[in-house]
Length: 176
Image (cartoon, rainbow, N blue to C red; front, side, top):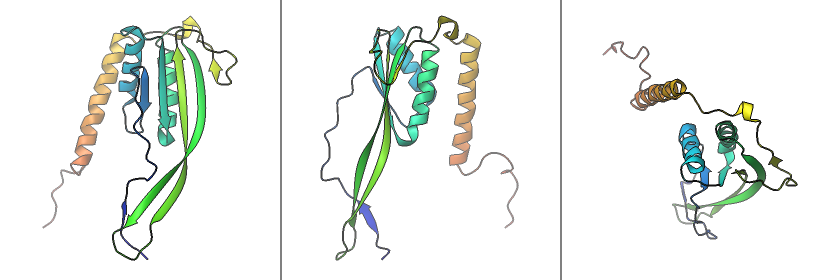
């Protein structure tokens, strides 16, 4: 039965949660630099004492990397980390009559990291104290420019890939 299926809306759909200004939801497709810039801006320019980073599934490793970079750019950050999992139910409706609905259950891991200038609960199982001052430094201006130029090169490569080529050896004439 290779019936064509169409994803339907979920019956027990949660209402969209309000996201606080100090909360960052990290996705697998988002740019690491953008998340880091936003988080450091919250701490340095918007005077937030706490920033919460959340992600699920394949974005978890990206979240851990982002947190470690932020901790090395903003001094005195306490950290708590919580991991959990959720069961997500996908319901698929058949396009043809007479076929049954298909319901799939999948377990997805998630992580919530709280970074705070204020002291957090040291008894929390996921607590980490701030890094020593010697390990915290602002990126040098030259490094910022290099990162930006690297991102620009990556953007150009991605654009070329979307157009159907990688710009390496695609200039050969095709036989007719």
